[in-house]
Length: 198
Length: 89
Image: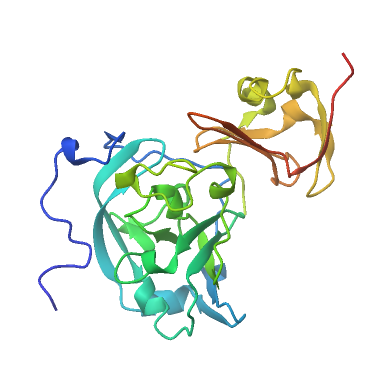
């Protein structure tokens, strides 16, 4: 085992190192574009569908049986709050996609409740994204996306879809819920890519 | 699936929609494109603690409309509405 966890982000950074236009919060604001789905873990399922239509599914027990990472990352919401050194536990997308045959460039992330968001495959692999199921050592509250949410913390937090239920992989970039309504297709907080055209 | 009480009624969308419509849309009759429910827009469920404003059908929770205000533009997505019926002035 290495001495540095995959999510290690160094010593606490000062507020001056926040991405441009962000302010520091110690709360964990709840943002939601709809009613909170309450998904029982016995009914939870995560499906990856490739560009050829082949589907791979995991149920809750299968997810928990996979090797998990402890992740400590800063998160940045497009509504301008940032929260430093948040602690999560989850399964890396590298692990989940290891046996999925695909050459797709894009993923459209789907959630229970109908939410979607688009993320390039290059941003989901190489230790950059997880299916997280614990926050601060506890199961993730439904209001924060439990039982499981995508965690892709180097992009604005709307990309870290709550209540995640699957990925649909494609050679084309289909835009998600906020991306079709004026938000940036990529969403890099350090480049302040909030809105389309930024 | 259960719902919570984190939404407001359709009147909460009045300000955002007044950027786009000359008439008061909250009194309009709407039909949901998802379930077909017809009702007064003010009775829809409006979510404002989000990157944009989202109005949902009180019957099926389907999205009726979305409003995103950027520094330069207002995006209005009405695809969840079959129609919006407004009285002639």
